[in-house]
Length: 193
Image 1 (tube, one colour):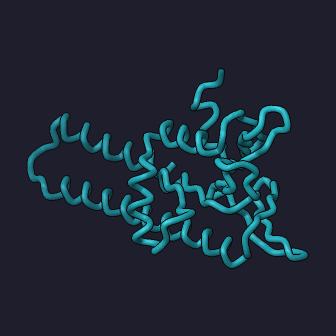
Image 2 (tube, rainbow, N blue to C red; image 1 turned 90 degrees about the vertical axis):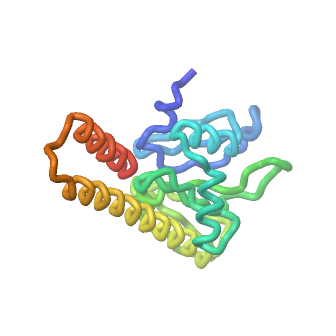
């Protein structure tokens, strides 16, 4: 059995629902340098991804649904460097089958239309046919970019707040002050990844 940090590492760039003729509803994970088939539904894989990163998707959806004026297909914004947008990739076969693919925002090279098909191309040249209009795909991409900008603004505010706090202090820095500063910097760096 694979550890979750081997499955959900920083090289993960796409999560695609897949139907295996023998095992049924499964998920393909695409990485910068390969792919892996997981015999779990996409819903389970996304839930496990959120657990791995200690990410509350329900709270995130509630927050971003107000910002984006949308209740469905919201970006999964785990951190600034780890935002996935949802795009329809297949017609569901069964009742609980997932139709949405999840694509890492920072790894999307291009979304385009050719011969009536809408295609998403990743930076490693993997391409996927989408079952939505070009306008819908571009809107989802722009929503992902907006969420990324909001994340960056929040991180910038946290850095500014930390710097202002330490600039106001006249007394010498104590070990505990330095430790708190390192913790804030580690937190910011982790979110930037």
